Picture 1 (spheres, rainbow, N blue to C red):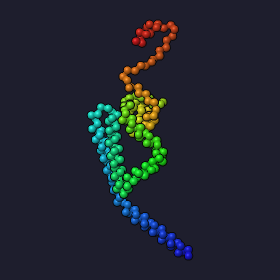
Picture 2 (picture 1 turned 60 degrees about the vertical axis):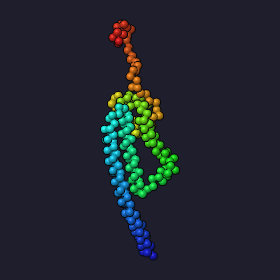
Picture 3 (picture 1 turned 90 degrees about the horizontal axis):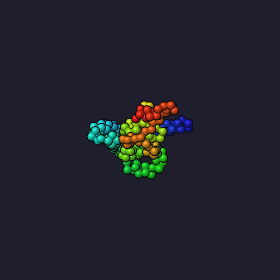
Picture 4 (picture 1 turned 45 degrees about the horizontal axis):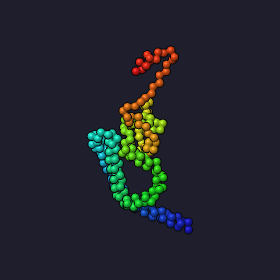
Length: 205
């Protein structure tokens, strides 16, 4: 009795393993094709970024140049991912509809990531500040070195690099110190009671 049960279990396991192997063997060509599509997409996206770097040299605004580079790069990647899903046999339209149904749960799970991405695109489109501007975001003050889709790179005056999430940049009060070519600065000069004020004023002027 025990031997028959063992043989039955072993036969069931073998049958399941063979079924899985047959199914995996059938999917291998599709998986290989999808990986090939992603590899080609990576190469095309890299090429698009390099071409856009050369093509946007005629655009004077550095923020708009950065926007064009990133849009071209991520657009190629998005097309490649959709093609790879089609190659795998997935219905992209049904997948998008399914994401719409489960969008609430997915939105909560990816809230911070999506917020940073959308905020980054809005910052690049509106170009409230540009690369090279000196801005203040919350307690961070420095020079804008790069505006990525996810975060803005600020170089503080003591040389540190701070990556501020774009969601925080977009929702915070931002002070652009270099928005105007003329700015007022206050300098406090302390003198004792015995100093000659007229001479001190002439020296300061």
